Each structure stands twice: as structure tokens, then as C-alpha cells.
Amino acid sequence: MGTGIRIPGGSGGHLGPSLRTQPRRWPGRPVNTPAALEAILFVAEHPVPESELAQVLETPLTTVRDVLNDWARELEADDRGIALRHVAGGWRLYTKPEALPYLERFATTDDGARLSPAALEVLAVVAYRQPVTRGQISELRGVDSASALRTLVRRGLVAEEGRLSTPGNPAIYGTTGRFLEALGMASLADLPPLTDHMPAPEMAEALDRPPTRSGELPTAEG
Image 1: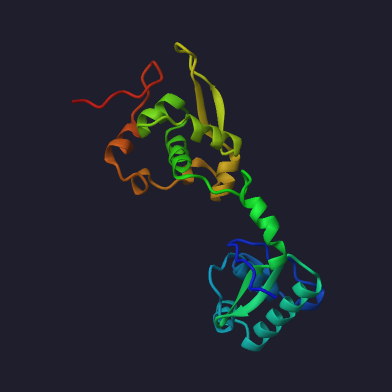
Image 2: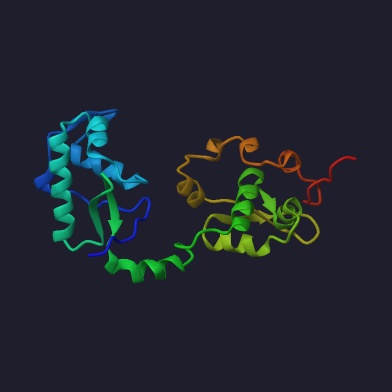
């Protein structure tokens, strides 16, 4: 069997009844050892040693090892699309080689494909400046942003929120609930400070200025 492909955030599946242990007290609620291991390996970006897992869970090393071995056998026996493997001194979740054709196909879809740098830049402008028109976005970036904006609308990250009562009635755009969900935020108030992510001072300053009556951004003084 091949090594498969590692996809960060891949699902770890559910552990069967045979792997249940007594619930442990976890911050906020009880979580059993298998469930905690599943959550950790779900987000792990590298193989995690058994000793590290045991330390984090405050669980005997032998218990952690037994649970991991049982889980790995269960995933193989159930003919799942993922596998739990012990590699490079630690444990990590991988997709199985048989799933490769479907993963490649998914990577070419809108949901699977990564956003381009241009689309990410437009998304940042919309997130911090909303509601914003396409003209405002293009002026800030210095290039036409229509294509990137259409991509964001198609992906459900940005949506039209109305139109300005100015000549041409330009559409105004804002982020969606899917945008918040993708970033794990409860509201736009959770956005990090703009200055941490906008290296160009003139862009950050322009984003903070109110739009003119025409719906376009005012030009900088001087």
C-alpha cells in the first residue's frame, strides 16, 4: 500500500464502541481519550509522537498506544478513505492511494481549488471596507477586480448587498456567513487589526476613509 496523501484538516472518522474509555474531565466538558486523539490528529500538520499525545492528554503512554493501534486497524477494516499511520516517529492521518483520482478531481472544482492571490486580496478589501463597490476595490488595488470578485461571489464568500443611489447604481458587496464560517469567526468584529495584514500604509489609510457621494474613494490629499 502506498503512503497516500496528507490533507490538513482531513476527517478522522468516528471511533467504534470498542475504543471507548472512561470520560476524562476536559476544559469545559468531559471528553474521552479516543475523541481527544481524533481531534488532535485531525488538525496535526506533522506526525505526533505517542509521548507527546500522552503528555497532552495526561494519559498513560500504553493507553494512548493501544487506542491508536485499535483505531488504525478499525480504519483499515472499515475500508475507509483515510488511514492512520505511524510514520517518522509519530502518528498522522492520511488519505488512501485509492482516493487519489477523486482528490485530483475535487482540487479542480470551485470548492476544492485554492483562491488566487488576486482573489484573496479582493476578499481582504471587501472584508475590511464593506460595503464596497467594484470600482472602489479596483481603485484600491490599481487593477481591474471584476474577475476576482466574480470568483468570490461564486464561492459564496462575498455577496451583493444592494446598490448605491448614484449614477449607474453600482452594486455594493459584503462578506457572507460562509466567509465567517471559513475563518472560524463569530462576527466581523473578530477580524484582526487591519494594520497587521495591510503592509501598504496608503491602502490601509484609504480603507479607513469613508466613500464619497459618488461611491468612489476620495483621492489622497497632496
